[in-house]
Image (cartoon, rainbow, N blue to C red; front, side, top):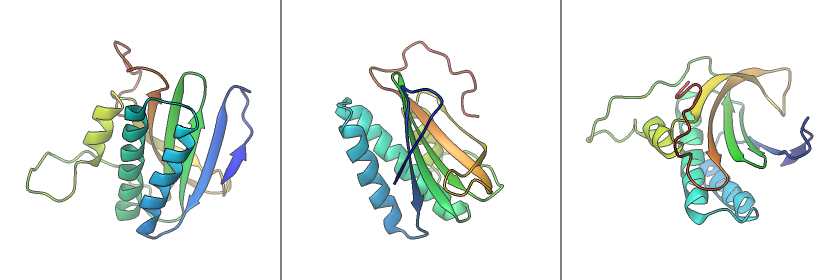
Length: 155
């Protein structure tokens, strides 16, 4: 893990290179749970973040390309988790199918993040010469997003 400097002093940033291994998902869940627990956040918020990180990393491993990276951004108002992979293909929500084994991840993320999620090109933190695809979500540090309307819901 590397702690990164940020333009705003009130912001903390962490990054973890991820292995191309199914055990990575469990390791990332544990790391995110530990980091967020130290912030004395609501247990439900931590559980939601852990589940969403699990979904993002699983999607990256299944549909993306290595290298993989997990970043956590924390400021006074929100937490943001970002998973990078090198595939140029953007994720697309699947049509709900109760019989399918896969295809619910982005729907879970959309619901739990109140629409504060998305995907865009981004440079890797651990390999700044590489550009990948960042899939992310953000959660308020306290309470629900409430009546706030996301600027770019689901983008």
